[in-house]
Length: 239
View 1 (spheres, rainbow, N blue to C red):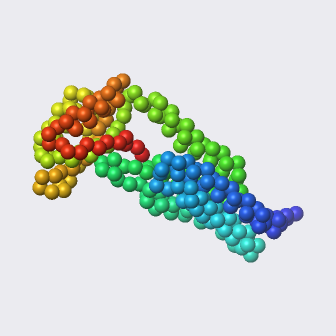
View 2 (cartoon, one colour; view 1 turned 60 degrees about the horizontal axis):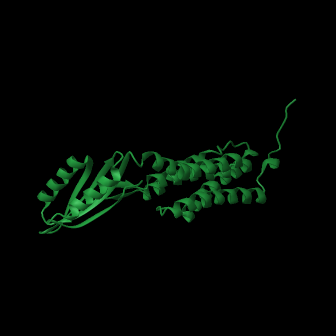
View 3 (cartoon, rainbow, N blue to C red; view 1 turned 120 degrees about the vertical axis):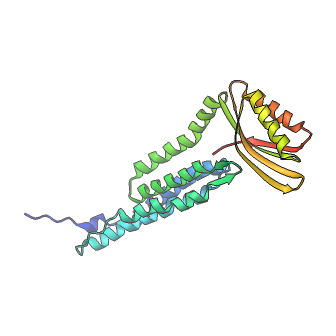
């Protein structure tokens, strides 16, 4: 005996659609607020829109499936959502910025992509996956960042330096001398000429060991006291 399934019973109600979209917006609020708090390129509204947009695509895919299945068509409800996961990469790439020799925004780009994935889950009605995934992402961004800092503070600390000087050769020799004496790892040196007698040198300096903070202070003090150097700026390099 042949049995048929009543697809009308599976159709999405307005309340179910609203619930899925609210769930997607909640995901964006939670993850985006953390990014906003840490002054990242993509904040709360960006994450909300990414998650909501992914949810809308998934809900639309399911609605198309329910609508045309009765006519014998077999649309794939996962096809549109698959394009979301691929297409959201352009937005994540927009959060990645090059600042001197360092790259920033990789974590935020990953969070935008992950939020889109959670939006697809919410749009498919998989609330447990969406909400548990949100908690996992939040733990990764908050708890593991703190744990990473806790474990690595005394081992390795990377800083981005910007040094304005009048003689490039003498300043580079001074930087090399200090790096050997203080065991500082220098990488990504870039030189820009602002005028014939004014140059800007950018580089990343890595300070390791138990006395990393003291070596950082000594390194900055020695560069600042150099006769060829007029400005020395430094801040911790982050992604």
